Image (cartoon, rainbow, N blue to C red; front, side):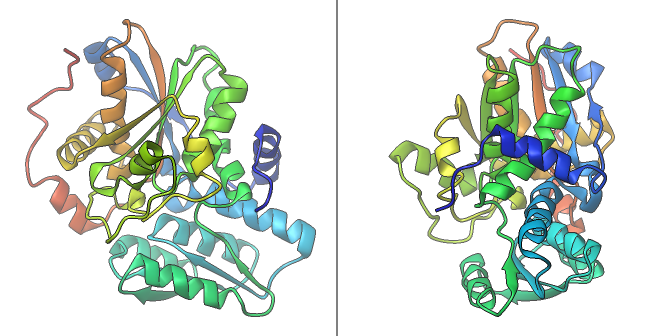
Length: 333
């Protein structure tokens, strides 16, 4: 294994990415804050180039590799969508061919965007088959495999989202930072940044109950792999297992919550309505964890929530709105 990343690596990634990515805005909802009696700050990574935070990790990985080793002949990656788009975009930025390996249940909109950025897409029946195929492809000469989350340079790049958010929120005392957790790259990088810059703040991860490999891993003290592909609206968190680099960071979290599919649909509808943003269920579900945490806190807390992506297919939108939850405002008891 390589050495685990530290906050200096996040800072270096932040400098490396400067000028290559968009600084994304901070947002809040005065109505939501009034209902909850707390302030929720949203980091809108859904407005990042390629529509998600994933570009931060993929581009940091690629730029650092090229600085040290020169440009590869080919880039390969395995992804359910947002990482695929990020790698495809990063490759096009540096004029390097890209091949993406994914399961055939990839979101149609994410698949189309990946190909629009110039990547060649290879689809397989399951994520595990795609993961196996990309390992073989990476054995080709001068081929660079950019993993979706399980690498120090990916973790460091993802940590720049919260670093940027904290520099944008100096007028607030942030009491807790919340991220969605799939493979754990964003959560790990966010923990590094939060511990360095907000040592008194809680760092909290949230994942779907239907894809709770991270939660089971934390409970049993070792990495657990889901036996079959998970069925969840939060497709960006449908990874079969966390990684050997991300798991030790997840073990340092202050809290970790699982949320059900009703909670995911509820908060996706409400954040679409309150923020007027097109946001993925994967990041909207994080608000269910926010509510669970705030229930036991005194009034007046300020929390930071990373809105990790904004790439949603028509099919997912139809699933999300099968039941109308907007008649039930999100009050705290």
